[in-house]
Amino acid sequence: MILPSKISLSDKVETFLNSGKPPIYIGFGSNPIANPEKYTTIFEQVRNSTNQRLIISKGWAEFPESNTNDILYVDEMPFELLFPRLAAVVYHGGTGTMAAIVRAGVPQAAFPFLADQFDNRKHIVELGLGTKTCDFKKISAKAISDAINECISNPSYKLKAKEISEELKKTNGIEMTVKLVEEVKNNR
Image 1 (spheres, one colour):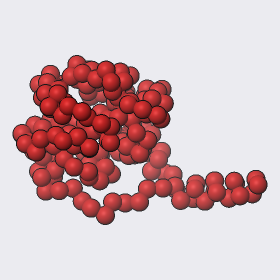
Image 2 (cartoon, rainbow, N blue to C red):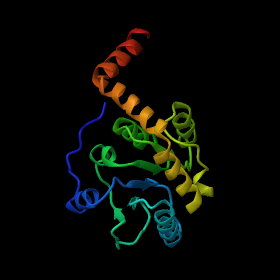
Image 3 (tube, rainbow, N blue to C red):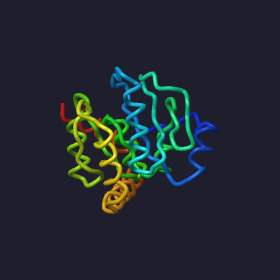
Image 4 (cartoon, one colour):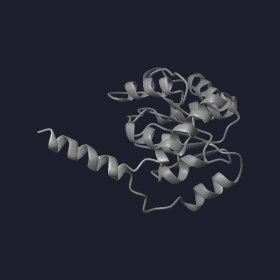
């Protein structure tokens, strides 16, 4: 049961998306980023080693406002409009983000930080939606680059992501929710 976003992608994001091959999105949600300079350097190394354009979600980190032709730092945006236009998503493994990626039908790599994120990574790998990764606390430019390269070079991830996305499009979330609520109510 997903409500459509009431906002659209900014002109800056649209221009970036339309200026080259589909980029990779990297976002770690509300996970604390104590050293944004370190991660800015990591993202530059990832760009250089993968030859991929990157959209970086600032989340709660204080990343720089500066953008280049191949790295764009962004604030919160509607995933349902962005994700289908990407090559892959690298993120923290949060359930809401994972659901948006699955609906978009793109490969994903989760670097979990806490709670359900570890189980979500396990499910991503088991379902064939993306590659196995290290935990966020062990993240490096090499780990992110390896995950991106695997997601975009292994066609089985894209195929499986599209397959599951198509199945979800056939599902009526409101009907499922009503049915589950009625089952719980009737079993009391």
